[in-house]
Structure formats: structure tokens, C-alpha cells
Length: 363
Ligand SMILES: Nc1ncnc2c1ncn2[C@@H]1O[C@H](COP(=O)(O)OP(=O)(O)OP(=O)(O)O)[C@@H](O)[C@H]1O
Ligand SMILES: [Mg+2]
Image 1 (cartoon, rainbow, N blue to C red):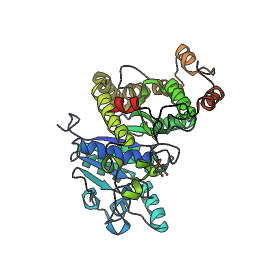
Image 2 (cartoon, protein in one colour):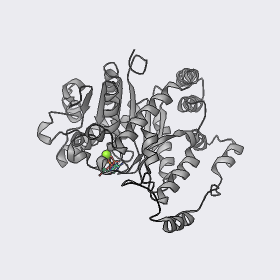
Image 3 (cartoon, rainbow, N blue to C red):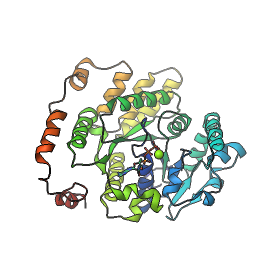
Image 4 (cartoon, protein in one colour):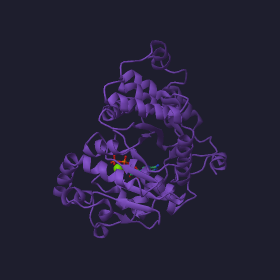
């Protein structure tokens, strides 16, 4: 039994349609935080831009092979892995540094998705947790990651209303589900780069909470310089400065992920797997299996409702309750901005916009 009390690793992809929302920052800090909490972790960067390796202190000269070599030369994952400075954290990256290598890697990834999935399945027996960082959008890397994963984690940047892009992402996840042997669940959404000094950030938080309910993690990651320094220092913030607000957010997120997993509805999960197997032989409706698998929590949240909507199978009354075009009962953005102007300078906050109480509560 591993740290999740199961025989094989949990594989979680960090994905979003939008670029620059904090996927790589989150994947690296979560991987380090899981590793510091005793998990044996494999982090896989599928983005040829190599943010993962830079963030873990690797320069180009320290890289010795990657996914492109696995696809091209038939190497094993073990032969392309890199040990990091954390004992329990191992890294795999594309190692495609030039533009030619990058386009070759993307082509190879598209042609070798099965090889990628098989390699991850084999690695499940070695690690407790496998985290996959994806490039933005729905390219071959994201497809491969979703086909190899148990679940996906969606960072949502706090500076815009992004329900539309989350909706498109869920439709894509739905498409991927149909190509899989096993259920794929949505681990949850979390907000990144929040700044509670701005009412815009609070407004976005309120809208996401309204739309996605219990699927939204309580933890949000604040905008901090410690986190933005990661590529410079070559150390995840959770190692570089464990006490910073950003680090504590990632530790809290790890706790929430574990707690959510422990509280999942195991029976629903087993039924989902059974249904999915049956549906493979044409005996059952795949969507019922997927929906059951997608909602491991007894408290079914907004994502499930969106799934129903996407599958054209929504319940009229709940749709009306949850997806009415009316604005939620809350202040408008203009009101919020007005309040911000009126209240500017009156807040008892530190550098990052958090009052002292905030630090007390997250400690
Ligand atoms: N919480 C944060 N506070 C401050 N800066 C952050 C935070 N999270 C991410 N950043 C910065 O925002 C930028 C984008 O972050 P990151 O590279 O993690 O996003 P991404 O979603 O992986 O981007 P891409 O889609 O290009 O792969 C980086 O410069 C990073 O340092
Ligand atoms: Mg990235």
C-alpha cells in the first residue's frame, strides 16, 4: 500500500486552456510539498518550454535525455528520469531545447500517446504520486496527460472571469473520457495569483464559488514574489521559503487534496468502474459511469452540473437554479470597484494584502 492507501500511484494532471495561469508554478510546488510530506513523487513536465526543469534548478547542460528520447529511441522512463535535490522527487521533462527539437517532440508526442500512457502506468508501481504539468490548450501533450491520469487539477487565475474557458476545458475532458479505459475525475479547481487587496480578485472568487461550488478548493494561492522568483532561484517556494504565504497555500492545497480523496465516495467509484466496463461492451450508458466517477464527493458540485449540461442531459429545475442568466445575488463589479476606491488605504494589511489574522488562520 502506498501513501494513498492503494497499490498504485495517483496520477494528476495540471491543465488549463489559458496560458500563464500558474500551472507550472503549481505543479512544481505541489510536487515538492507532496514530497516533503513523505510521498515518493514523479513530476512530469510535458511542456517543451521546460519551466519544470528551470524551476527545479536544472540548466540545459544538466539535462540528459527526456520524453523525446523515450519516443525516438525507445528508452524507458527510468533512463530519462532526473533526480532532484529533494530525495523523494524525481523529474522527467521533454528535453527538447531547440526549435527543431521542439517541433519534433510535439510530432512524436502526437504519434506516441500510447507509449506515454504505458510508461506512466508502469511508473504507478514505483511512485505514490505522479503530477503532470501541461502546456496551455488542448494539444497532444494535454491529450496524452489526460489519457494517462486519474484526475485533473485546474488552476484558475484570479484576474478574470473565466467560466467560459473552464466550460471549454470540461468539454475537452469529456471527449478524453470516451477514449479511456478507466474513469477520469476532476480533482478540483483552485484560484491562483489572488490578491485580496483588489476587489476584482474577490469578485472573481465569489463568481467561481457561485459557479463551481464544492469543486472549488478553499485554498487559493496568493500572488507573491516568492512564487514568481522560482525560475530565478531554481527552487520551488515550498523549499526556498517554507513560511511564505505562497508556500503555505500549496501545503494547504496538498492537505485539501488528500482530505478530498479520503472523503470520496468509494462505492460510487466502484460502480463507475463497473459501469464503464459494461459500457465498453455496449451494455450501459458511458455518461452515467463518467458522471458517477467525476463526482467522488457526496456533495455534487458545479462541475457535475456542467457535465450534465454538456451531455445534454440536464435536469430542468437544477439547471434553472444553477445556470440562470441572472447575476448572482452579490455586488456588481462597478460597486466593488467603487468600494475599493472609497476604502483605499484604510486596510490594515501587510505587503501582500493580508491582515495579521490571515497569517494566524493559515498557520
Ligand atoms: N502565485 C503567484 N504569484 C506571483 N507570480 C506567480 C504566481 N504563480 C505564477 N506566477 C508567475 O506567473 C507566470 C506564469 O506562471 P506559470 O509559468 O506557472 O504559468 P503556466 O500556466 O504554467 O504558464 P504556461 O501556460 O505558459 O505554461 C510566471 O512568471 C510565474 O512566475
Ligand atoms: Mg507552464
